[in-house]
Picture 1 (spheres, rainbow, N blue to C red):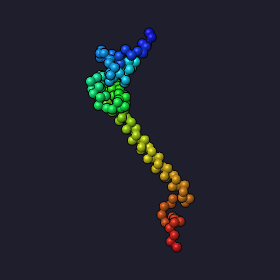
Picture 2: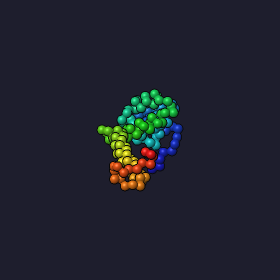
Picture 3: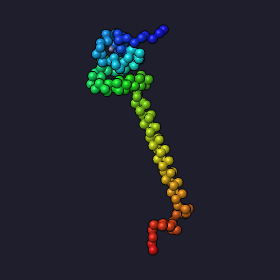
Length: 138
Ligand SMILES: [Zn+2]
């Protein structure tokens, strides 16, 4: 089964799915090519074609591709995880950031402790006999 060749007559994935004629000014056609049918199916299932076209009309033309990509990402995440969608991924990553931040703080604290130890030649007995060269009491 050979994949269909490119032609100007083939409707975009959106128009093909919606069974309508793909006009030359179709708002979907630059972003939903016929060879990626699942992209439109997902987005349509989650957001609805009319909402998607509304969003595309509201953003500037150079922002439309990014908007479609984020809609496609969100739709795919929502299909995989109907409860949390992409918030699931965000909260996992946020927890990871918190955990790594704590690890980094601990590592920095260790680093400060070790470098403080190596800079003072005297062992820390704590108390009276500490010599600070910069405190010159004459
Ligand atoms: Zn179209």
